Amino acid sequence: MPDSALPRTAAPHHHDLGTRLLHALLALHIIGLSALGLWMVDLSFYHPWYHRSLELHKAFGVLAGLVVTFKLVWRVLHPPLPPPATLGPWQARIARIVHGLLLLLAVALPVTGYLLSTSAGEPIALFGWMELPPLFGRSDAQGRLMGDLHTWAAWSLMGLVALHVGAALMHGFIKRDGTLRRMFW
Figure 1: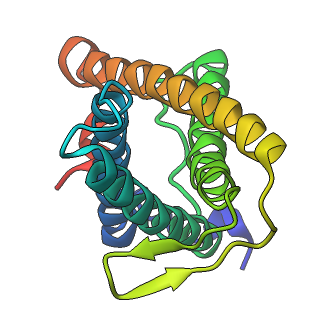
Figure 2 (figure 1 turned 180 degrees about the vertical axis):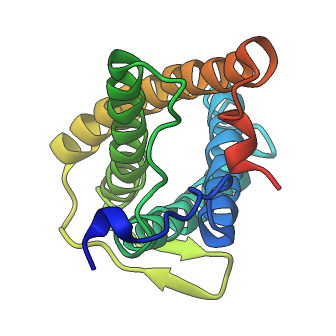
């Protein structure tokens, strides 16, 4: 039977549950780690929360790395919905580029954070459960480079998240084209 004779099923109106949950979990990590990172960089070395905030940032950063890894595997196994028909070709292309950059930066941040944190040759403590050992020995040059890359990636990610949220809100409340609803229940 030729493809044109097969009955067509309507495209799903929502992303699958796994995609929505991973999106929410990664969004919470990004928002939480960004807020914690912005707060902790202004703490003095002697502030009571200086060391604890750094430990939490590292541990949750490792968890964010696991979430984004799982999200990438999930995305390969469950490709995203096609762009809505209401998007023009240039808007669909920009959306693909922004989503790609969001994922790239969501991978880059845990990697640079790990390499920054372990540049002193010390492991990362994960909530007292276990330690993640360093891959390399002590390297001040690695620490400086990874610190710069981590900061650049964090600010870039926060800017792209703002753009992403702004576009989602515009589609949800101004255009009302169903794009925002695809990620929610």
